[in-house]
Image (tube, rainbow, N blue to C red; front, side, top):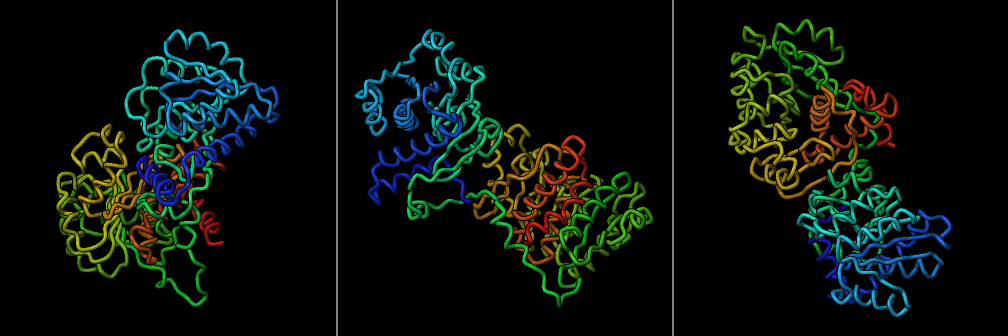
Length: 516
């Protein structure tokens, strides 16, 4: 499903109005009707129910006036408030405001802090609050009466229905403009907006309903939208039913370079992630002294004992051995648990330089490349990198807080500059392609914030690459699959008690669902 920026949505609306001839007031009426329909669901019986509608001066407020009219027509006790002066409302919003005024409905202006105080008790007595204050274009810090009103709404204890986006969320980033309405539900129009899906904004949205308001597909197609939400519909075609006449060689060979003393678990989880995602053959390259441990830990994967340092990390003598065999494999995963030993940088660089097959780089594989971005830029093979915010900060020479405050911008910039598919991990992981495409993943839960979860993802990605998926498809499918397995595990074990092995255990069940 496509997901729009604020500007993309404005361009779609403009095309529908100016090129296709659909009056803006018609779209506003349709939007208001959709919100009214959901308000009825929230209220149950509408007649005599008390509803407070808070409107801003723009089109978001105009939608609120339409909702007010329809609720009034169905017998609700409606009070409408405007943050601003009635004379400042124009266009389609002004038209709908005037209709209410012509109906004899009082629209009360909120201009001062005292105006907010006067209605605070009234807010607590209603059955539903409808938020039509600010739309997707808000940018600056909310101050004055609007700030006080939003705080009062949030402390009212009443259900809140937001129109298009909860007031206070930046439409493109999910940032909060100081305060934000905490909605029970949000009815958004035509397409989801990025700010509804990204944290911290996503925490304020409540149940999200995407409503069709009659914008033709031609208007949507008139705008180049590069972002999408990953859905089961996107992912299912990537998991076709297997032909009966196949063998393990048909499903790819994976080489994993992982592990060091104290970090054998990372290597094992990565190997099992590749196997559980459907790879035919998985070989784990590890420091040779760890081989007896891995022979016990892993039954289905093969091992490749490699020369090591005195501290049981891969040594430079391992690189010629790896290079000699590297192109026997269909996909390579590098990094989990390798350590930050100085030789690891040379090994990772040598793998990237000599490999012609797709590579997944994670964890220590990324850490040793901090400050050496030219290694990725000059790669001969497709690269997927899977940084968490801290690793991304080191790669991009910035801070974790800067990453978290500009996740989309940074993910796209990194993909372009590093010429790699970037998976920026976290709540609502992002997948960015060097050509500008971006995917937002909605699967996953806080229980997956546990050691080893990222190693499982690395293995899944390598397994999907080995089975022939393109790097971008593998990244999209892998992140979705990983998160969904985590959701299955959380339902079975709880979020708090979830461990990485639970994600592995649920992968076959998730694949069964996707293969149906």
